[in-house]
Length: 427
Ligand SMILES: *Cc1c(COP(=O)(O)O)cnc(C)c1O
Image (cartoon, rainbow, N blue to C red; front, side, top):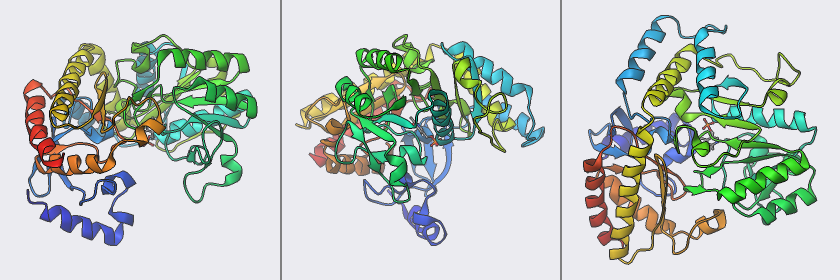
């Protein structure tokens, strides 16, 4: 496979853009090699600047549930563009999109739209702190909630205490207020509640940012109970899993209702869109009805809202797509597992709706400590080899894969055939 144009493009980009990319994971650092520069997308395919075609399991890191250039979304966006790119004033479409989300999810009275998942989570957190009147928050090791200061915090010396900044520039004074517990471990949560004055717990109920690691339903139940007992606000960050793991994300798997939700990715249909929402008594504290400040020049942008609305309308009209995508995800992961086994490679797999994950790992993965035991060098070899055979997986062991509706069994079987060759090469 010829990647000359991509390599040239990357070198040129590095002259003017930090690291050559506008989001670090795109640089392929953890798998080596040079990132592929994209010319265009088409259904389930990506086409790079050297005209190589790839079966795309990244789908823009989740948003593109209907694949690239979906005709229905595209035509709605074209129409919206002709009426103006931005007004900084309310439109009817925003209300329509809010109604749609509220109808699909239980436990959302009010919503506010923003432009990125980071913003949604940062704002939800501010609101939760204002409501609980407590500064300490609790997050889980391995969960990602965007890059706001309070959440760029690691377990540091270990779980079940306050964390350490995971990036220079994050004040330690701030990270002291972020406690870090172990995913799927309720005792570590109890410990944090004893040590801190925690007013808010945030979790990816289906974690997709340490690889795919769903929370046990019993664990989520216990989390809801402990938040009730301490009067702490429970936030489900469904920026990735919302409208992806199922039509209503985690609620397709259990009936636990958090106090606040955050959404992003799919609700923008590929445009910059995100939202947070939840209980009236909390949401009403938000400006202008309350005094918790939050704003955005491009929040609820009419083109982005149109794209999101088109995507969610299509989802609502075709709820069967989740079962169909789950079938394909299982065909892929079961197939990979079988082929890996034939080549004496240990592989752990997981599927939730259109989301799938696989770890080169001997043991079952329930938390980030388990995930970190994976063979990342094996993953890097697998990633490179698959890329060269025209299969585009996320460029890290600790990411989730995504099925889109244009995929079918034939596509999955093509991928499995190539994986068979690759496992033989890399074992
Ligand atoms: C992607 C993601 C975010 C951040 O969203 P951005 O739009 O990249 O800022 C937050 N939380 C979760 C769970 C995510 O997957």
